[in-house]
Amino acid sequence: MPSNSPADRVPTQDELDLLIYQSRIERPVKMKIPELCREERLRHIIFSGQFTADRLEDLASTADKIRALSRNREGQDFLLHLLNNKRAMLYFTQPSTRTFLSFMAACQILGITCNEVRDPTTSSETKGETRFDSIRMFSSYFDLIIMRSKLARLAESCAYLMNDLAESGNRSVPIINAGSGADEHPTQALLDIYTLQRTFQFSHPKDSPVSTRFEKLQNESPGLVKGLAHKVYGFCGDIGRGRTVRSLASLLANYKGVTLIFVAPNDPTLALKDDLRRRLTDRGVRLVEVESFEEHVDGKSVIEQLDALYMTRIQKEHNNSDDEAHFAQLDLSHCKLTTRLVARMKTYAPILHPFPRDQHFGEIPPEIDDDPRAMYFRQARNGMWVRAALLATVFGVEHQISRFFHDEYSEWHNYNDDQALTPPKHV
Ligand code: NCD
Image (cartoon, rainbow, N blue to C red; front, top):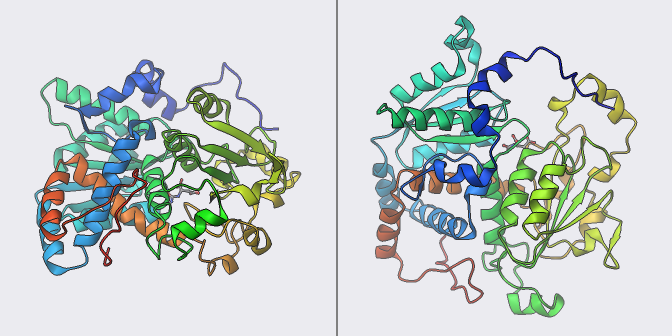
């Protein structure tokens, strides 16, 4: 069993670094949210709790418009000039492929110039500079800082630093959390939600695993409605340490009548953490925790009742020395998807994964990739569009995008509306 550190141990430099923001960090998220806005507009993106269903709807709609405009030269040129007066710093001191590159591509779509620091040993942190001095320096040269760190509260602390700077009349820029330790990954959750929004519109042939018409699907699955509400979502794998799971589960709590089923070994490291369980239950979400897809809930096996499945990898990089030996004793086979399990899933249920998948562990074997329900590659591409929408929103140009778009298209749809109009074919 992983051991707890003794209370009297010497704090690490990382912990000491964050100490100045400790009292603000310890407040409930609800109290922090207003501070992350400026005049009602999202400024720093730190927690998924900042996003209501309405905000998610607006983001998806902006993302769809950017995506549609990007298909022709005129639209691309319009987007390229929107924010070409802005510069972004991508400060990623933890490994990243998709988040880093999709943020970079999102910046490029909107004309934002990017620069990066990925290896802190090449920055002045090796000369004893604190992270906060580094961040303040970035804010002198750039208009936005997108950051990923193994330190759970660093991005949040940087947002407070920026707010304090603004209050004292100094230069201050928005902070975007692109993954904070094992805690949150709000922008991944945004792209997961965007993927689900598109899938559960049941109208885009590429986004929905079934090309069957919605009415026909309703015959097969009575009670099926468009949109994210009233659905059963499955999460499988490293629930305890998966920051994407934490952020996405919190966003799903925005929708009525959702059930979240967590499939993980009954183990304190891998199973759902108490704080998240409490947060979700307080918001009225129905939670079910099982150890295998085969378990029966309400008289039916879990795998057969999922409307969507979110697979995750075992987060080995967070293992401490005890974990290795401890995990070797656990049966992790239930954290793997197989073609036989997929065959029993609902025909329309998308399979998502934040990626990377672990080829050695094999939570999603490649033979599943050809199944129309395998949505993970499309999901990753959605990240670029939704991140571009987020940047446009943070810099306040989303209405310009809408205006330009509506000059081109006369009708549009609403993801929360059952009577959604069909989007233009070329989106
Ligand atoms: C995730 C992350 O970094 O938390 N990856 C990503 O950003 N797409 C998931 C993971 O690493 O397992």
